[in-house]
Length: 331
Length: 300
Image (cartoon, rainbow over all chains, first blue to last red):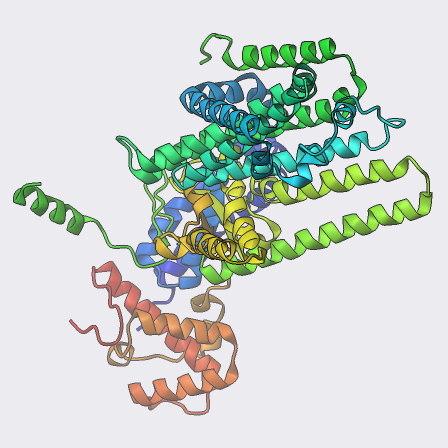
């Protein structure tokens, strides 16, 4: 015999208003963040959330109405993520990123950064020596598209002209800058992502990059244009190469934690390394943006070698100081 | 490892509670398991397709818009600005579309929202921006790398290398097939996962609104003991579906099973409602006394 009123029915009737109230608050919070809630509503939210959770536990043990339990589960899940997913607001988060998170993340992968730098440097030297011996090696390192006519067949005068190309009424500079930026960022993201495969493909990318640099330098040095070429390259190169080294380093950080997770489980170690590396990578994209601007604008507008060297050195000093200058540990 | 060590390990494994497939345990600090469901492959694939469609639509829109402005102005200097806008726009779309939507409170891209999915931190903590960035940056090798290999063409050694590359990148693509939580590589690198978190509407209680509609029918204990919880839930689905044919069929079955001898001229819907209310009351009150009857075969 069915009782006049089921216990589960009475249970629901007593609490339904609170659930609905929680639902309205959640809809509001989800639409525009917790900032949209009024003061009293913010105070109300955790209470209603706990009430809904306890309703869920009770419903699971006394009610057989599956639509009710499903509703409560969905409601509690939504509330859980609002209540415990407390976030700072965007401006604060951006400020925090540049003031603390990014430099800290970069510092935390200093070992990988050294390794990535060493790989690039060795590859550069090897590329340089090989091309110096036999100019034909140039074609194995350089992508013809990127070389854009700067190859061993070009005359010295033509090579020199590429270093000091006068912009025609600054036509195409910003286009070039944005193309270089997007191209480089994509490569940087790639070498970060490839880190999961134990960092080996990342190392291969770094070797390729270094080899290209070495081959390029060897070509220009062989024509007696060495210092000029370095100036042309490094005005943006200190920023760009630094960024690429960092992206390689963050790939290595992930690869290392995949191979040697240490005391933690592999999944946990990879997740921790991945988040840290991701912070570095957001910054790398910013660095590449700066490099793209330098490459697209400054390089074409600044024609004097000494000024180019000065810009290159000061950019490098700036980045190094920003990342590695010792600072007080914050709470 | 010693034999004893192995034994303790095996014992430890046994103690661990087996979760049904697709379930993910997330215990809130208040100690309640939210029993999340891991997003299914189909749902996630459709969500990804939707997102890619939206992305492509946005790109085409961007291109058309840029072209339209270029055609309208016909100025010399504008071409370059438009080129910059297009390049940067495409870059932002490709890399920050997912990031932008997943750091919102709903933690889901439009495609995921349609499919009722959301991204969570696998440990139940808060989903941070760097985690979202990491999981989406990994898309480079999960989607774009295999595509590069697929569209690359070569001969001889090159072809063999491309073939190997395709196989190798296939490992990344098929990664979600080989772990219980269906996490892709990006999820692993970020410590996130995708769960089903649809928004449910509170439906009317069948044992309440239709009490009057139950027509005062009563059932004996024997009649109510014909079924268990599983059947009750099927019955609930049938009543809520409002499918008359199914209701007629089920009503006929129940009548036959319980040997119904009451009035025969009542509507099927009324009969089902009355039986549902009766059965739920019976099962719930037995549950309060500690007996949870799984299904009709569960007799004790």
